[in-house]
Image (cartoon, rainbow, N blue to C red; front, side):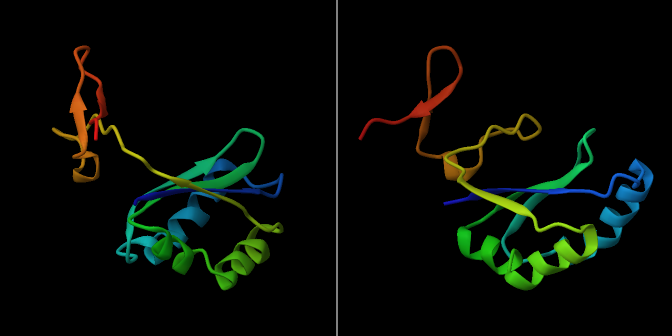
Length: 120
């Protein structure tokens, strides 16, 4: 089952959006091609909250990336330990794709066009 991970951490108040973007861009290579990572969104909130939303193929891949070493690096880089939440991704709607991903193959269209679980 795919896993969505939401990571949040406070950013130093004096970091500009441009600086945050530069720091994020610097970290991007460690995620490009990471085993099991489907997608990552970098986050920067108006309240100086930083973080990311990750879609992983499975929990093992997420745990491998979000190791204790990685958590310490985030704490050292930004001054606070990250808060990490894990969610089972039951199915995904991707409006940029022509069809639902294969993980949603057990879904059938309803009368109003939404996809609903098939009955077992």
